[in-house]
Image (tube, rainbow, N blue to C red):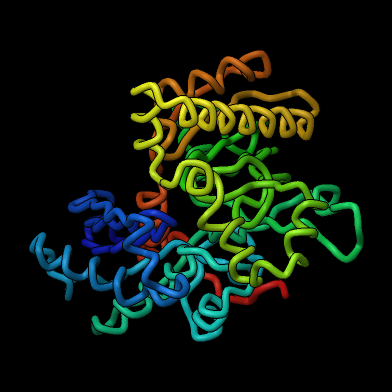
Amino acid sequence: MNLKKKHYILAINPGSTSTKFAVYENERCVLNKTLRHSVEELSVYADIIEQFGYRKGMIIDALVEAGIEIDKIRHIIGRGGLTYPLESGVYQVDQQMLEHARQGIYGKHASNLGPIIADYIASQIPGARAYIADPVVTDELDPLARITGHPKFEKRSIFHALNQKATARLHARKTGTHYEDLRLIVVHLGGGISVGAHLNGRVVDVNNALDGDGPFSPERSGGLPVGQLIDLCFSGRYSKDEIYRMVVGEGGYVAYLGTNNALDVRKRADDGDRPAQFIEEALTYQVAKCIGEMAAVLSGQVDAILLTGGMAYSDLLVGKIKQRVAFIAPIFVYPGEDELEALAMNALMVARGELACRKYNPRM
């Protein structure tokens, strides 16, 4: 293995409200950008897959504007989307994965664009390869966690696996411990919110952060009263797509306050907007409740609670969560996301031959 050989890596993370990407020369980040997308900008597209050209074009334009020599890039790694469940690891993008991402086998989310954009850019560069790592459908659930209450339904593992795993491993490094030895609750606070119970290196329980489980978020409804939802579905007033958008994309802050921007809600709350103050408080209340649930999963033996994601930059929001759950375990805040670095380092290990690249072989 030649550690001095230069490997140029492009990491891409499409999120519900942003497209983040970074260029690495081995371990060194040479460019890191976040492209923001408002509800109005995205509303012109019928579905997420139609956003491909818009987001791909913005990435390429930004690379050119930054003076990046695109032809030097040989490894393009995207955030994994809602394909079928997979074990944790790095996977090379293939046609079956692309088809499953376009179909949205487990749902429609911006992360489905990760392998699609990575594959397109790789196809434009001779010798380049496209990958994903620790996709949102990473599945390590305990068998008990899959039981829902009716055999026709099974809990699905859909969450911010890449950032939760990266944050947990970062915490282990900073505290001189090993991720595989820890009992953690990791909370991703972003456009979607996921709260996971990490037991000895595996996420044994986590809310489905996409389509109707756990806390509401800036644009997702979280868990809704089932009876009322059934009535709404059969009321004849809404189509299936309209109901789905209430749950994903137009729930949470969007439904209550008309925005998916947590910073706007925070500013409105600071300016005395009572509805903004109340709904923000409700979000922290629901997050704290879910942390309590995961503490029960870990039998109350929790080494630490880790708060991460974009909203973890808000001291006030974090403080409100801490007030309710500090009795459970020590709380550590790692604001933002390590997802781009985590993607790039996974690709670098593959490039150096330190990590095997898996073939997409989903558990259907």
